[in-house]
Length: 196
Image (cartoon, rainbow, N blue to C red; front, top):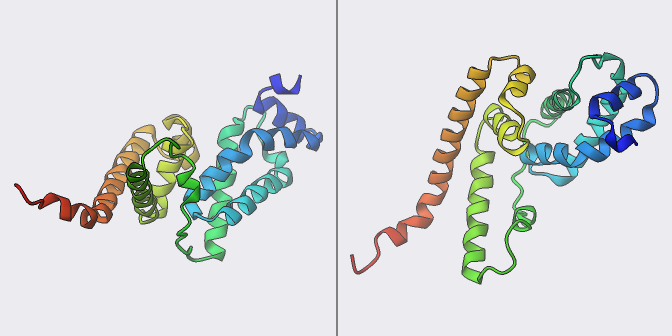
């Protein structure tokens, strides 16, 4: 029966004191929030900790959840705040060389060459994302990876939908430029092939 309740109704029960119901929301949202934090920090252990912090904060501030609220937006609002607090405490992240999480997405039936090419592309993409400013990474994480609608992102960031579109456009342009800078040297030998 609880599975049929929407997130908002469950959070209202939590707000009313039935705090055990937060476990269902944790089940529904922990992977998405982990993905959000992982793409922001590139550290699995830190991401797990930050997800836990979000749900602890939800318990602490359950009274502030609005009767007309949207749980998804509230969860990402909390997540942004938890991430900002984490950034204040830890000024920078070390780049993680372990790409096993990315490699898990690759198909198993690829040839060895195709596998290495995809691995390289994913590594360049991860590095290009990491090189973005915090704001650009966050806007791409919310709109592209978490698939939040522009309207929700606008509410979350306190800006207009058009401003969200502009920020997404700029972030994607910066990501493409970062990717091309990283990929450039690898492509150089092929572009001057003998026989041209």
